[in-house]
Picture (cartoon, rainbow, N blue to C red):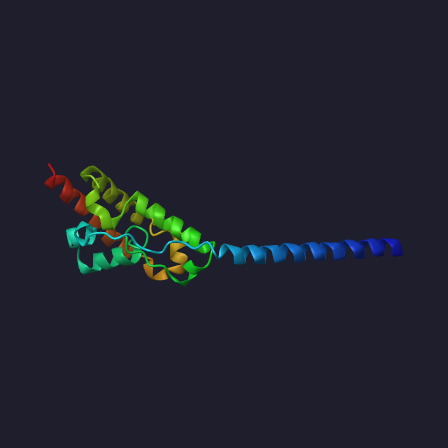
Length: 170
């Protein structure tokens, strides 16, 4: 009985030591990754290439785009305090890079008419389906959450603009 208790105690002590080593290693790793910073500079782009500058949407629409879309889909990304902490900063930068790669409101004129048309269609669908802004983005940016009225307004704006562009390009 005493031998079993001694073995259990020994295993418990070994287990605690192993957990302590793992925690120390994780803390050291966390500190080390802080030295791998993301680039927070926004690319320079000409204002005359920007979606809002080109189409001059109503103030309400422009505000919704700036608040809910431009952080990831433009060269006007804002980097909040938590982008100073890796690995969260890496995830945010990845989302911004993906958003800009898909399309960039700041470089709207670089897209073909066909691509612009497709993007407007996608914007209407993504907003209507609640896919954009990304739910993960809304966790830290609650001000970007669109109300049902805003969703409908933005969706109709994208659809109407798409139709307007389609008829003017014929």
